[in-house]
Image 1 (cartoon, rainbow, N blue to C red):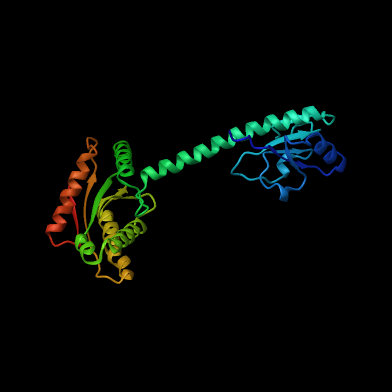
Image 2 (image 1 turned 90 degrees about the vertical axis):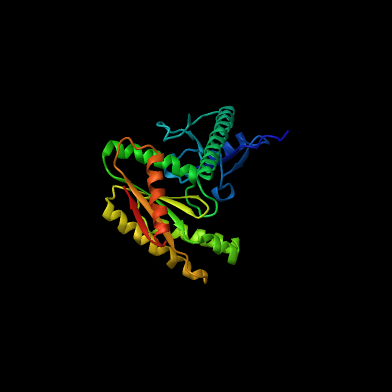
Length: 280
């Protein structure tokens, strides 16, 4: 069994007598004690007779604070009288250190959950939201559009002749093309717009509150940005075809706009590729 970590206690006081008395009270194998902040950069508990708010501690992790002789506690977690005994100092610091560890463990677990949640929703190749994130966002934006009445544009983007890129140059170059194309799509959108990689060379876009004319302008901008972004790869330019529809019907389900955008994308492909088509 791994032995428990020794609590780290930082003493902060301008009174050398108090510093010596507190250090003597906490002396022993139960605590790691220091009066120098630089020598103990990550304390679990700060034992002080100062106003705690005047000291700067890491904002990312919880630091316990025991105040001695301060009438108002000064934001301390535990307030002790000026004549606190050695036993009181040990109990306060020891118990608070345990609470700090639990709190830090909770913070670390929350960070891990956030990282895992993010990983579940991110395409590892392009760094864009993935199909799962797209499905959730589309459902949310459709519900918002039904309430607000603002149009919602759903667009599908497909790279033209992408298979030939992999066949001719290999999958390493193909992956570079996908990353560059994804970045071009992301950078060409407005702040509240949304782009995801659905899989392969297919991407999907959501434009909120954009009438057809504005949507065409935005989509044409990202369509032209794709081959420009790929020029630095030194290969033949890869173009993109885009099909889109506008969701203005409250009864639309998730499948309806995707089917219409997919039909518009097929029209763009049949019409010669490297173009945008709209489907009502």
